[in-house]
Image (cartoon, rainbow, N blue to C red; front, side, top):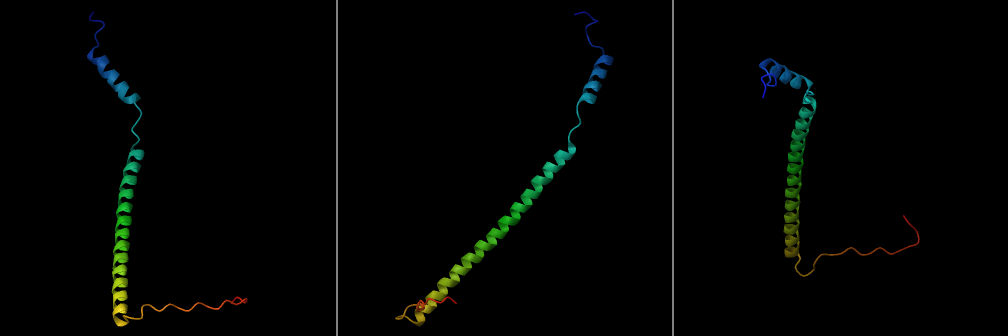
Length: 95
């Protein structure tokens, strides 16, 4: 190799500066927006999960209460069972 072909420190430094200046800037706004979206999605997911757990707990308690009330009803009237309403007589007139 000839010494003329070797890059000098001046030309290497200037070529690095040109490469750095010619590179497009990073899209910081897009990066920040993506991180914000990820954080908001996580917060929303946690909120929805907590609400779903509350509803599941409420449904379980309601089912337990229904079972308890049915058991009490059977104890109060063991031979009768649950009374069913009588069907309405059908007439041609609508209310």
